[in-house]
Image (cartoon, rainbow, N blue to C red; front, side, top):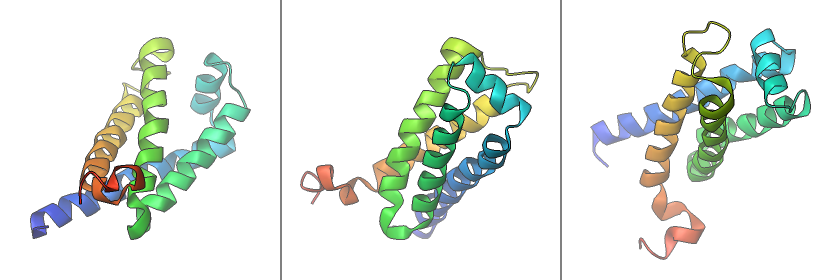
Length: 131
């Protein structure tokens, strides 16, 4: 991996982990936007707590070098659900946020797809295809 590729790789890890981590405060404290989202989806409060726990797990795994692949896969799954929820039920803009939450979800999605691609040789199910 070149120096530029390493910078992009680590940036993708940290950006995704930071975005996932910053949403935890809003979910665990019951911020108005978070409660609105999960009420609209019919999953308040347990959906909010479970998604926060899974996002915390993904963020931590993204920061552990040998588990980046797992953190990226978990992140990819949960953020795909978030993006679909926005597109189908919530809309891009939620409570006048100008689409910031949706934009952050897209950044995490792009980072996760990139990390899964780069780490594909470390994913146990795919490992034997890329040796």
